[in-house]
Length: 491
Image (cartoon, rainbow, N blue to C red; front, side):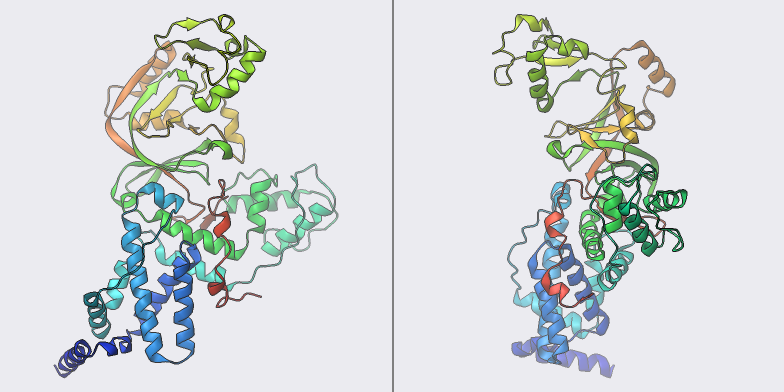
């Protein structure tokens, strides 16, 4: 009872003496939580204010000026809360692109009093915990970030990039061996004789498997990047992924389809577990697949293909040189009434992109660019998921090869899953495909689809996975702010 009365008296004194607000120092666990959330946001590099405020708090703590320290902690709390409230309501697209334009922070007198009350009553920590991102294994992300910020890089021997495989030999192979020895994938007694031997091949495959890469023993650019990714770059990737993963719909919706572009994989999640995992081909750098959220509302069986504008320009160039170019691909030129137009009847001027008034259409069939399945969802970018007539592309390690749409390796499996509850049973679908007729199958249960940009994440096995920044969305943010580096000197 005495303690409660004493706290109440302290609060009254604070309310009457506004200059004393800065003296309210929260419990140690709340102090640490403020610093951790600020550090996480500072490493994510979305706004310089987080790094600067983290720096101020650490320096104030080191100065032993408790009034200043309490004041900076309070500012840090409001900056965190301000950002969380702003970020939570952003659309999926902005969260994935991390287009953050945080408004100016304004703290009201009432909010300041509420903070002081929570600090005095040891309830601030609970409020801070409620502000944590809604991300599975969130505390593990913190642990990994701390590990990478405080762990010195191995200073690996590095060679100028070139593809290394079983046919390779020379000093670059020796440099690769030395790097893999330091990383723990290759026995230290393996001879450095410039030869790509079986032991090195197994070591490369082990490293590739650990980084969710195709375990083929070929050191292409993605494998090379995985070997030489620095600890600071890993910390930034994890911190930015925390923000991109922070969407409550990923926990509340079931099932849903997720396409992770850096991973070049599609996953179907149901009740928190992945039930379909499929390789995908995504848009090339010059024709990027957009990051978006929508609803898959129908599946087209034996789709025809209307050549998009992004490809039409290229086809017209070839057509001016070879009038039979489209015919060889099984593509017709049609007017808006679907009447076929003979390309020989068109002048060279009509075959320019500016003056071309027709559609290019490929009829259904095994050579159709969309394959046998097309998955439609409303969006302003005119993209969709589909199968392909070029399945060999799924064997590639780097699969940023399309003109924007997403090609799905396990398209048949995805179609059967989505068509559950409709009259399009697997037997009916097989018959339709065999007959070659085009059918638009409306889904009984509309399924959400998310196209994401997660360059790092923690799996259900607690292992952290890193993927290429394929569209370089994070390239200019991977260098830590100097205010963070000042407190995490590795060298």
